Length: 557
Ligand code: NG1
Ligand code: ZN
Image (cartoon, rainbow, N blue to C red):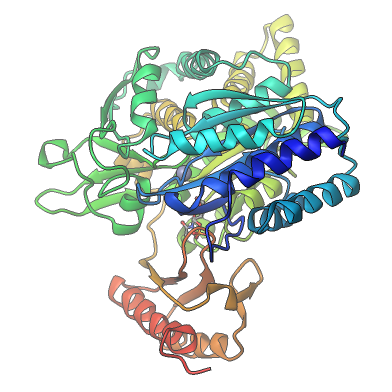
């Protein structure tokens, strides 16, 4: 590092001291905490994003959001050049950088890391970081801190994209690095054009089926509501009524996380909405769940990420079969691999259903960085978390084959059924956000598939019946004391707790239970499934008590 770079960093770092006693870690989705504690962390993540951009000679993204957390929290995460999450091998550096006390220690860390990773810091480097934020009140001042961090690395520009959804920022990073047009309008254009294309190829017989054209969307009082208002103007054949567009408190009694976990009607919805398809986005619009409202009750029927995944998997498999036959063989030497990725939170009934369809289902730990990585090993990899975060990934080689096949079919104009299947799959690959889970592309794909099948939401929900489940969170002294294995299904530390959980679970026929430390909140999460809701609740409560006994505030160590 040259002298000029050194003095810029020393000066800027001294303006962003760490608040005393704060120790953060780059968890499931970057850093998250009360916004008042985050200025120095965001500044440092700005430095990190700039270094990543210099190293990869590509555009990198920095998003300021705490997603579904309460409005007073905020967070920061980095989008890698591919548009996906920050490469996992940079995470330990993110941790040490954010927790480095004084400017000299920080400088030394950067110097060492730059040498190790061969990042040139001699003044001649170039880079660009796209900066986005959600609608949280703290977003603006944290974005300033990010800019200071980014521009502390000489030659790196911070391009402020303003308020946007997390998936929009990831999409832009990916598009920029592919040399494609990457404005917000380009994003809306791509989604609306590919949606239109899918609607065009709806089988003629299904066009007149009585699928309601209206969907009511809960925008969680976050960025999703206002952006969806823009997108919906470009769509015909679908009417979107956007509620909770930002006038109320973000994520409070609204949004995908609330709807999925509490299973009650979100604010802004009521008896007049009975019978309609409803959907909820989360605070930064990367999650999507559907629901319908029950008559004379505050309960909802939840159609979660697992069911969205099942609908997508069914549709994709059907199109693939039209194109390649049951064995998925594209030609003698190449077989299209379709895979589905879930986490332990996936309802057991969904996994059973997907396997019955003949699909390969694999599990990873919680966190889209793991699911995404696994899904990218397939020609078509579909991943979803039960909470509604997920997408579909297409391999370059498969897309190339698909384009070729489509051209072939156009020239022979022989087999229109196969050509339509190819065009549908190509449209899905453009509609669905290949960078990260995106509630907008998810919503449009669900709507297009329901139309395609001629299905109501009720019919969709009947694909399988969820096993009753319960999720609880328990506050503990130190959540890092819990260490898990086997895609988080087994606890290896503290010793003895897994045996106690097993003994409890054995009391419930078909019971399933696991615990894991949250990566975004200071809690241990408990998940259970059983044959009745009462049993799932009772098992969850017993295990929560166990967690408290082993790790709670009254535990004597
Ligand atoms: P944690 O807090 O690590 O459980 C939650 C979600 C994840 C993921 C992240 C990022 C659950 C049980 N966990 O992580 O699936 O979406 O937030 O937002 O929903
Ligand atoms: Zn989110």
